[in-house]
Image (cartoon, helix red, strand yellow):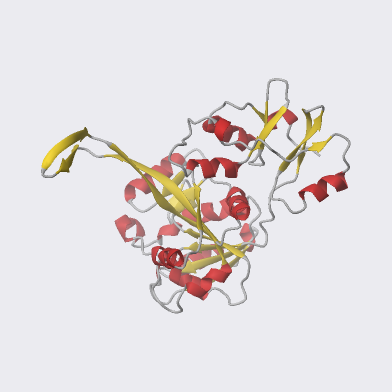
Length: 348
């Protein structure tokens, strides 16, 4: 049955549109997925948020690339008249959100399955940093509690999770922890459960994971307490589940222009001069989905940062899939970032 609030045409997209256009269409259907059709609505394929994210990790795809090379040409579908029980049986063991319903190869309906259950996933928010690069702003206030358009950064992060069904949170706290604990309490006023991982010394961006309860199981999301993003975290979980990955790392494109001519030197002689070239890198976005079985790699009661943790996993041949963040993302590390965040959220 078509999800309430949508029309069947909301899920239709042509085969030659750009990735940017497809993303806008996906946003309209809450990331459930798209059905690729021709002008007569004949089924051509399907396209998911995960398909797009995977494509964007490849160097030959960007937002202006066509979806023609990345959509599935052999999608799952059902025929008109199939019972609800048969639909459920078809999708039982598959991570899939929408299924086109066909009559004579024409899509006449869309069966929507819905998002993964997020309620059993705990979220760990690292909120214990000093925020020293923000100078006087954090002398009397912990960085996660700095206000952006009338709300603390940490509250905005929390709201972004609870809005899509996450209920169980752990805040890793240290510097001025009482300010955070006084504001959030046990989380009940925010319709969730908040527990605290209390660091009695600096433990790094991964060290405080050793403070999690021994009986925690399944999957956790770990995020820095100074990151504001508009990503729907259900899409991240869906991507993680599709890859059956022990860990998924969010990444972000970072572009900058070298302000000088770059000289290529061979055998002491200039061979090429590239005037003010643009450089592009994939950087860590400070958000991770982690199978709790990997927490055994985190030492107890030691300073341990996330890059060291990830390097250790790579050395042990653990697969780390990358989820490119293409939504708004602001890392509030410096005064300019705080100013930008306040401008972006000023009309919230």
